[in-house]
Amino acid sequence: MNEVPYYMSDPFIGEIRLFAGKFAPEGWAFCNGEILNIRGNEPLYSILQNRYGGDGKNTFSLPNMQGKIPLCFGQGPGLSSYRLGDSVGSETATLNSGNIPSHSHTGKLYGLNEGSTNVPEKSVFGRAIRYNSYSNDKSVGVKVNMAENSLALSEWGAKSPLPHSNMQSTLALSFIIALTGIYPTRS
Image (cartoon, rainbow, N blue to C red; front, side):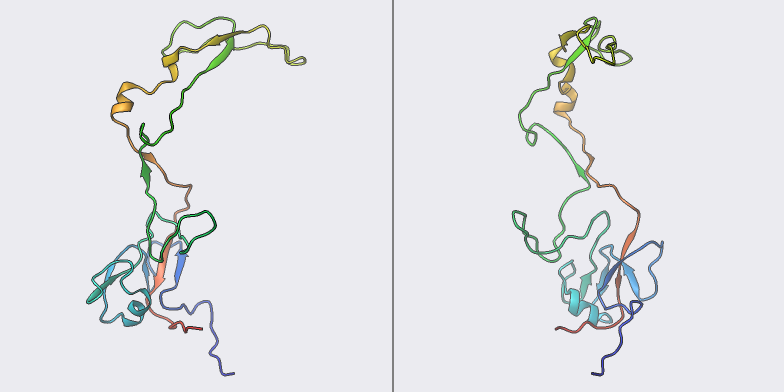
Protein backbone atom coordinates (compact mmCIF):
# COMPACT_ATOMS: atom_id res chain seq x y z
CA MET A 1 0.00 0.00 0.00
CA ASN A 2 1.32 3.40 -0.97
CA GLU A 3 -0.84 5.60 1.22
CA VAL A 4 0.11 9.21 1.79
CA PRO A 5 0.43 9.80 5.54
CA TYR A 6 -2.16 12.14 7.02
CA TYR A 7 -1.13 14.40 9.85
CA MET A 8 -3.51 16.31 12.10
CA SER A 9 -1.85 19.53 10.95
CA ASP A 10 -2.92 18.72 7.36
CA PRO A 11 -6.61 19.56 7.18
CA PHE A 12 -9.15 18.18 4.75
CA ILE A 13 -10.75 20.86 2.58
CA GLY A 14 -14.03 21.83 4.28
CA GLU A 15 -12.94 20.48 7.68
CA ILE A 16 -14.32 22.52 10.56
CA ARG A 17 -12.42 22.97 13.82
CA LEU A 18 -12.78 25.02 16.98
CA PHE A 19 -10.20 27.78 17.28
CA ALA A 20 -9.38 30.13 20.16
CA GLY A 21 -7.72 32.91 18.15
CA LYS A 22 -9.02 36.31 17.05
CA PHE A 23 -7.86 35.60 13.49
CA ALA A 24 -8.30 32.76 11.03
CA PRO A 25 -4.98 31.04 10.27
CA GLU A 26 -3.65 30.97 6.72
CA GLY A 27 -5.77 28.66 4.56
CA TRP A 28 -8.72 28.86 6.97
CA ALA A 29 -11.75 31.16 7.33
CA PHE A 30 -14.23 31.84 10.10
CA CYS A 31 -17.57 30.03 9.82
CA ASN A 32 -19.45 33.32 9.66
CA GLY A 33 -21.61 32.91 6.54
CA GLU A 34 -19.14 34.72 4.29
CA ILE A 35 -20.03 34.58 0.59
CA LEU A 36 -17.18 33.34 -1.63
CA ASN A 37 -16.71 33.20 -5.39
CA ILE A 38 -16.86 29.70 -6.83
CA ARG A 39 -14.02 30.61 -9.20
CA GLY A 40 -10.82 30.10 -7.26
CA ASN A 41 -12.56 27.95 -4.62
CA GLU A 42 -13.75 25.04 -6.79
CA PRO A 43 -12.58 22.23 -4.44
CA LEU A 44 -14.35 23.77 -1.44
CA TYR A 45 -17.46 24.53 -3.52
CA SER A 46 -17.60 20.90 -4.73
CA ILE A 47 -17.90 19.84 -1.07
CA LEU A 48 -20.18 22.58 0.33
CA GLN A 49 -22.08 23.48 -2.86
CA ASN A 50 -24.63 26.19 -2.05
CA ARG A 51 -26.35 24.49 0.93
CA TYR A 52 -25.36 27.43 3.20
CA GLY A 53 -26.25 30.17 0.71
CA GLY A 54 -25.06 31.82 -2.46
CA ASP A 55 -26.55 31.53 -5.94
CA GLY A 56 -24.74 28.29 -6.88
CA LYS A 57 -23.63 29.81 -10.20
CA ASN A 58 -21.05 32.37 -9.16
CA THR A 59 -21.10 32.33 -5.37
CA PHE A 60 -21.52 30.06 -2.36
CA SER A 61 -21.46 30.66 1.40
CA LEU A 62 -19.50 29.28 4.26
CA PRO A 63 -21.59 27.91 7.14
CA ASN A 64 -22.55 30.51 9.73
CA MET A 65 -21.89 29.05 13.17
CA GLN A 66 -21.90 32.33 15.08
CA GLY A 67 -23.97 31.81 18.22
CA LYS A 68 -24.71 28.22 17.15
CA ILE A 69 -23.66 24.73 18.14
CA PRO A 70 -23.07 21.86 15.71
CA LEU A 71 -26.03 19.60 15.11
CA CYS A 72 -25.84 16.26 13.32
CA PHE A 73 -28.13 15.72 10.34
CA GLY A 74 -30.69 12.91 10.36
CA GLN A 75 -33.23 11.91 12.97
CA GLY A 76 -32.74 10.14 16.28
CA PRO A 77 -35.49 8.12 17.97
CA GLY A 78 -38.26 10.51 19.04
CA LEU A 79 -36.36 13.58 17.77
CA SER A 80 -36.91 16.06 14.96
CA SER A 81 -35.42 15.46 11.53
CA TYR A 82 -32.64 17.77 10.29
CA ARG A 83 -31.00 18.08 6.87
CA LEU A 84 -27.33 18.84 6.33
CA GLY A 85 -26.98 22.63 6.46
CA ASP A 86 -30.16 23.32 8.48
CA SER A 87 -29.89 26.17 10.96
CA VAL A 88 -32.30 25.94 13.88
CA GLY A 89 -32.91 27.69 17.19
CA SER A 90 -32.68 31.30 18.24
CA GLU A 91 -30.61 33.36 20.64
CA THR A 92 -33.71 34.84 22.33
CA ALA A 93 -37.23 33.69 23.13
CA THR A 94 -40.37 35.53 24.19
CA LEU A 95 -42.83 33.83 26.49
CA ASN A 96 -46.46 34.85 26.27
CA SER A 97 -49.87 33.35 26.99
CA GLY A 98 -49.84 31.57 23.62
CA ASN A 99 -46.83 29.39 24.43
CA ILE A 100 -47.12 28.90 28.19
CA PRO A 101 -49.53 26.21 29.42
CA SER A 102 -52.41 27.44 31.55
CA HIS A 103 -51.39 27.34 35.19
CA SER A 104 -51.67 29.23 38.44
CA HIS A 105 -49.26 30.21 41.17
CA THR A 106 -50.15 29.80 44.78
CA GLY A 107 -47.78 30.39 47.55
CA LYS A 108 -47.95 29.55 51.20
CA LEU A 109 -45.61 30.66 53.86
CA TYR A 110 -45.18 29.97 57.51
CA GLY A 111 -44.82 32.89 59.79
CA LEU A 112 -45.97 34.40 63.02
CA ASN A 113 -48.01 37.09 61.25
CA GLU A 114 -49.71 37.69 57.91
CA GLY A 115 -47.36 40.42 56.80
CA SER A 116 -48.45 43.96 56.06
CA THR A 117 -48.17 44.46 52.28
CA ASN A 118 -48.51 42.70 48.92
CA VAL A 119 -45.79 44.88 47.35
CA PRO A 120 -42.53 42.89 47.69
CA GLU A 121 -40.08 45.75 47.07
CA LYS A 122 -38.08 46.36 50.27
CA SER A 123 -40.56 44.19 52.18
CA VAL A 124 -40.86 40.66 53.47
CA PHE A 125 -43.90 38.38 53.43
CA GLY A 126 -43.80 37.65 57.14
CA ARG A 127 -41.45 37.00 60.00
CA ALA A 128 -38.88 34.26 59.70
CA ILE A 129 -39.76 30.85 61.10
CA ARG A 130 -38.01 29.94 64.30
CA TYR A 131 -38.14 26.33 65.30
CA ASN A 132 -36.26 23.81 67.34
CA SER A 133 -33.60 22.46 64.96
CA TYR A 134 -33.40 19.24 66.97
CA SER A 135 -37.07 18.33 66.57
CA ASN A 136 -37.93 20.16 63.29
CA ASP A 137 -41.08 21.44 65.00
CA LYS A 138 -42.61 24.12 62.76
CA SER A 139 -45.88 24.26 64.65
CA VAL A 140 -45.06 27.69 66.03
CA GLY A 141 -45.78 29.19 62.60
CA VAL A 142 -49.19 30.01 61.14
CA LYS A 143 -49.93 28.79 57.59
CA VAL A 144 -50.97 31.86 55.57
CA ASN A 145 -52.19 32.03 51.96
CA MET A 146 -50.48 34.71 49.91
CA ALA A 147 -52.55 37.30 48.08
CA GLU A 148 -53.74 35.93 44.69
CA ASN A 149 -52.11 38.75 42.71
CA SER A 150 -48.72 38.49 44.43
CA LEU A 151 -47.40 36.03 41.82
CA ALA A 152 -49.51 37.13 38.81
CA LEU A 153 -48.06 38.48 35.57
CA SER A 154 -48.18 42.25 35.58
CA GLU A 155 -50.55 43.96 33.16
CA TRP A 156 -47.58 45.50 31.34
CA GLY A 157 -45.81 42.15 31.06
CA ALA A 158 -48.91 40.47 29.65
CA LYS A 159 -49.32 43.11 26.93
CA SER A 160 -45.67 43.72 26.06
CA PRO A 161 -43.56 40.65 26.82
CA LEU A 162 -39.85 41.12 26.24
CA PRO A 163 -37.48 38.46 24.86
CA HIS A 164 -35.05 36.77 27.21
CA SER A 165 -31.76 35.07 26.45
CA ASN A 166 -32.11 31.51 25.20
CA MET A 167 -28.35 30.89 25.00
CA GLN A 168 -26.63 27.98 26.67
CA SER A 169 -23.59 28.55 28.83
CA THR A 170 -20.76 29.30 26.44
CA LEU A 171 -17.02 29.40 26.07
CA ALA A 172 -15.91 31.99 23.53
CA LEU A 173 -14.34 29.96 20.72
CA SER A 174 -14.71 30.29 16.97
CA PHE A 175 -15.41 27.69 14.33
CA ILE A 176 -13.03 27.83 11.38
CA ILE A 177 -13.21 25.96 8.07
CA ALA A 178 -10.28 24.79 5.94
CA LEU A 179 -10.22 26.52 2.56
CA THR A 180 -7.23 24.51 1.36
CA GLY A 181 -5.73 21.16 2.21
CA ILE A 182 -6.25 17.51 1.30
CA TYR A 183 -9.27 16.77 -0.87
CA PRO A 184 -11.25 14.08 0.98
CA THR A 185 -11.66 10.81 -0.89
CA ARG A 186 -14.95 8.95 -0.87
CA SER A 187 -14.84 5.50 0.60
